[in-house]
Image 1: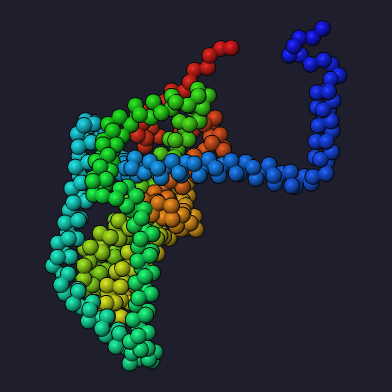
Image 2 (image 1 turned 120 degrees about the horizontal axis):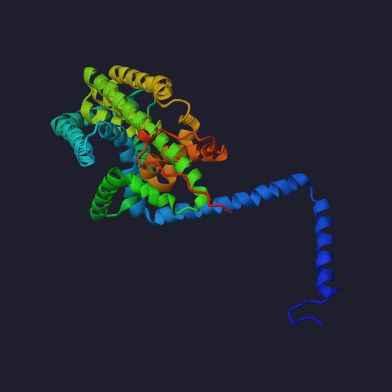
Length: 397
């Protein structure tokens, strides 16, 4: 006798199961091994792509929280070398936080004030000279070797205007992703400031809480990978800050000595644009050359171009390899691709955060893939925003 849920031996279920195994074995023998391997990789890739897509969708939906959080983390990485230096020299934490935050706000406010001051002083002359240069260029197109008509010139200008407007809307769509009103922007700025203060005040406590969310066996790998990634982000931010300063000083002084107007606003734009590697430097450098061409003529524009190219060559071939090193170096092709992809997904914020995020993911993936935590090598504690997380105790079986 058998129970109600038991199947008798030799039942039809056993026969179907055996038949299924035979069919599966026959099919696997007819499918080429390369196709089986490709199929195995394909469905795994689809699962990973779906997970990444869901993650990106969640970030877009929570953009009012994600963008201020990313801004605060990036600013923390920029401030961390000075902040950690003050802590090592026994400056009270509250005083170090006050000096770091207020000093940063003072520097940014001073740069903006200098830029606005020069713009208000030279705006009228630059506007007049720009209108005159455009009129001269239009006359050259009509009377020069091209012999264009006014209708053709107007059509070209209309097409150029539409192109600039389309690209501008695409770029600013990400910048306005944090909110469509000034109120949203203000809330995002306050939230970034609050997160920054929390990270500087109790980054260790926040990190210990985050590590405890993972299973016990995963805590040590997660801790080590995040430490390695954070050290990379700090090194990257420190390098970008120094490179941006040198770029701004070099191009700003070049514009000043060549008599190009708005030298201080150009230097400020170069400094801000340098935090978007390669792309930001190219765009701001092109703006400096354009101003020189419109206001000073082709010869000065040529010299301005030489200055911009010289500074960028110094950055790309000397400063970046020397300061950042091979451990956190991101290939220029990867930089261009991730910046373009970030701009397509999230506009200006995406372009700003794309490179440090990609570098962080790369370091974490290499750390986990090499199982580096088993060797016991860990980043220096002084470079970290958190304190050491103890290794989990292994309970006896």
